[in-house]
Amino acid sequence: MINLKPVEGSSQIIGVGYSEENQVLRIRFKKGEVEYDYADVPRSEHDALINSKSIGKHFHQYIKGVYEYQRVHQA
Image (tube, rainbow, N blue to C red):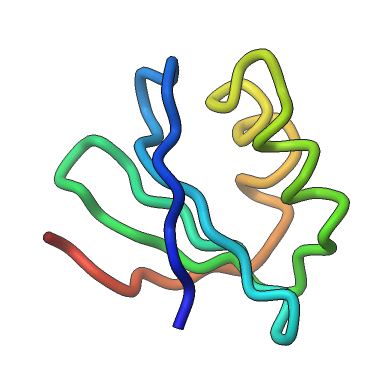
């Protein structure tokens, strides 16, 4: 199970979680509160995302279109 931590200051993303064991990055988006898992994401990329000035911008530049993903949940 991946526990999401709330993200503040992003207009697109409301939560981010990470599984060290499986190298899975989980992101919950504001629109529809949909969650996606991104596969084979190194810990360093997760850390860069949550520490970036703009989480949404970082996501679009370095994660979206780079890592395979699947939808996992919609609240």
